[in-house]
Length: 411
Image 1 (tube, rainbow, N blue to C red):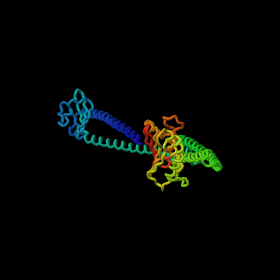
Image 2: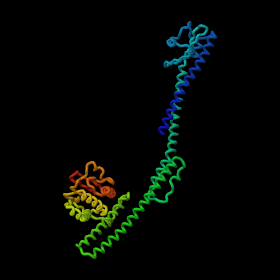
Image 3: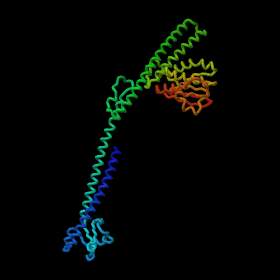
Image 4: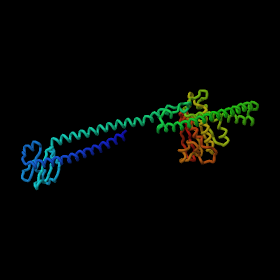
């Protein structure tokens, strides 16, 4: 709209200036012809009255006629033909011609006429420019509205559509077969492709989780039966108990992965909530054998406990397990501690730490430390980060290469 208005203003200005120049050029040409004809008539008719000429606003000067003091100063170096002289508040037209060897100068006083003409011409041109600009603004607004309105409508239609809605009416059918219609069709095709991919992924995750759960339930029930037929403390009982514990951990991991795979915030299931101390104790019991086997001191410290607050046990236990797994893998000696505070829980180790150039990348997917030749895809810390984002927690860490790391989940 602004561009259209500026173009209109430029074109109107150029045309106005051209009209003004053309009017003055035509005026000079016509006046030159008119005054030449008047001078010829006056010279051809020697019987004339100076008073009569003055009443007509004319003055005639020749070599033997004294000049008017108000006009004589403009006669010096006056060129032959028509000349216009404007000297406010006076305006004169001069016409100089030699007839039969006699030099004549005809002067016409145009002060009143010129002032009125110039004023009226200026008002007319200014009014015309203003009218054209206003018309340009109106046309530009209507044109912009006509062009933008289908785009706005297209945006509104897509903003109201949800990805999980099925059987919706085609958006492209609501628009004409022009550029906007083709744009709507392109959006519709991309939207359908994304929706189809999400739907297939949702079916895949549902099928995989169902099959995993079925298999894990069989493993868990089988372990319970085997544990009933064996005495506690025997090697067979410990092996079966380890399988059962791994099955439970895998079930919790599957639940956590399904929860963080959803884009929206997942409300806490009251049936799967525990206190922070209980979750930390569970994680401590699970990982203590691994640290004892590696000869690393493993402690659980409580600074300020909050008994009343409950958390999603599967998610927080999965996050703690991943932190403890990293601490176990990257700590050769020293100790690892779980530190419980009133609003946070931390895992502190004396391991190899994280290089400074890697600390800005370790929370991203598929990024892992290269200090040890460990197997893995570098998804542990990324999973913890996604769990924290899902539950509104904050993950932070401090690490010094060669001195260890501290990972804190602010709850």
